[in-house]
Amino acid sequence: MLSTLFIWLICEACRQPEAKILVKAIFLIATFTAPEKLGGNPQSMLWLLPLAAAIAIIYKVTKLPKITAVNFIKETAILFGSIIVFIVIAALALHSVAWLITG
Amino acid sequence: MVLVARQKQTLFLLAVGLLAWLVPGAGHFVLKENKRSIIIFTTIMLTFCVGIYIGSIGVINLFGATPWYVVGAQIMNSPIVLALGQLTRGGAYPVYGWPNEIGQIYTSTAGLLNLLCVVNAVYLAYLRGVQTAGG
Image (tube, rainbow over the protein chains, first blue to last red):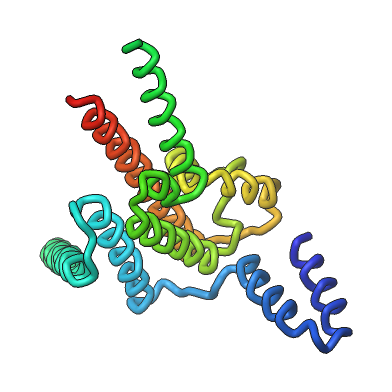
């Protein structure tokens, strides 16, 4: 239903040449109505990076007594690195266990 | 007198918590923690938007087969999620597989991070109330 509305809005907006920004905005919003094509490949594991960054940023923003650019970026980078290192170690350990069990 | 002051303090804490839920970062903004509020708003909104970009608004399926803990975490983002849930009611935007899972993980994590910020804002407001009361 929403997609049909977007198509109608785009058609209406395209008739007016000065409405290019509106068309761009409609296209941008329309991208949120259809899922991206993602496969279950190893590359899709990289989606954890932005999530780990968000967790590190929010955790540090609530924990630091005073926010200064240098200190905040340094602390966040350390926490982000720690999360990634821990995930890699956990992945390697689980992979080893799976390899030992399955041969 | 003390009772009235306590009631005011409780109301203020509730208002801060509610504001922080309505708009991520607004609780800290009320407490004049502008830098924190900007960072919180940007990070949580970006995380939530990445989630619904990957899986579409169909990942917010409040009245479908989504587990209760995912729904609860998604609602913690903002009441806007409830409006999106109405839009997607009845399976209007079906999404399956990896996009659904990654989208749900992103939107749920954004909600849980906002819950952390709500609790932090209320705690900061409480500490300031204690300090002004000379505690």
